[in-house]
Amino acid sequence: MNADLHCHSNVSDGTLTPEALAARAKANGVELWALTDHDEIRGQQRALAAARELGLPYLTGTEISVSFIDVTVHVVGLGFDPADAALAAGLAATRGGRRERALEMAESLARVGIHGAFEGALKFVGNPDLISRTHFARHLVEAGVCSDTSEVFRRFLTEGKPGYVPHRWARLADAVRWITDAGGVAVIAHPARYRFSANEEHALFTEFIGHGGRGVEVVTGSHSAAEAVRYAGVALEYGLLASRGSDFHGPGESHTDLGALPELPGALTPVWEALQHRVVHPQ
Ligand code: AMP
Ligand code: MN
Ligand code: MN
Ligand code: MN
Image 1: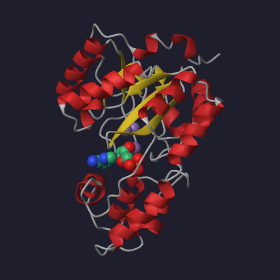
Image 2: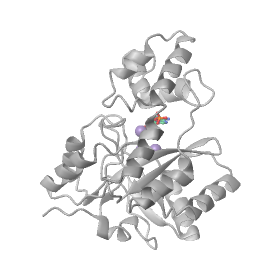
Image 3: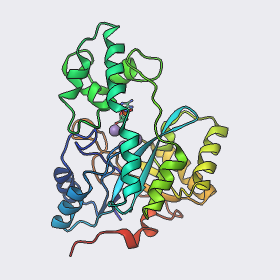
């Protein structure tokens, strides 16, 4: 099954609208799709309506920013009720500090001679509540400071670099609870991206499962083939459901297109098996 359960629209830091993403997913042969905007579900009705129009089965989605032992970890939520009030409130609280953080990032960049970055980043923002590092990266490329967004992250937007501002996101327990209380399944996103020691990673998975988390991304646009093999092992070891998603942010920016992913390794239980009752099928 070509399931793609991780991507971003311009409701967060993607460049395409939910409708354009739905069309692209369909054209690329995706058979089950979820839009997972960062800390946002206000694109869900549009994604769902567009998927229905195209005959594309859909799962609701979001990607929640979490702070776990001072590291930012992303938790994907799938198949929740998009009308759940506690989930909406939790996401609104998580988004809350983004504007102040962005202003601090701009001040910090100004100290190294890069002026007007807040206003510059805002030009790339589709949702004023969701200004992200990605928007700063696009602005610094357009301004000619760097040649691509990876270079911006390397030189400016990661820990220890001049544009980086530490931020406190949601707690792991809360993020998992918002998702599961709304009827969804919580999934650890792209686990190979965090620079955890073996003990810290064990703590993450153990606490996540203790809070009711049930899944882990195994095949994602941000994992190498070797990392997918490693996290297939982790899924089996912890008894977690396996997810698959491109983490597509837009053409020309993401190296993995919607639906263009390897299969999940055999022996794993795909997360969509546990979410069959939550799939929105087109009539
Ligand atoms: P934020 O939520 O504002 O901290 O921004 C996080 C987003 O920045 C991620 O979801 C990615 O889209 C993007 N990002 C993080 N690290 C990198 C990187 N090294 N290169 C390109 N994009 C990145
Ligand atoms: Mn992103
Ligand atoms: Mn992520
Ligand atoms: Mn993502």
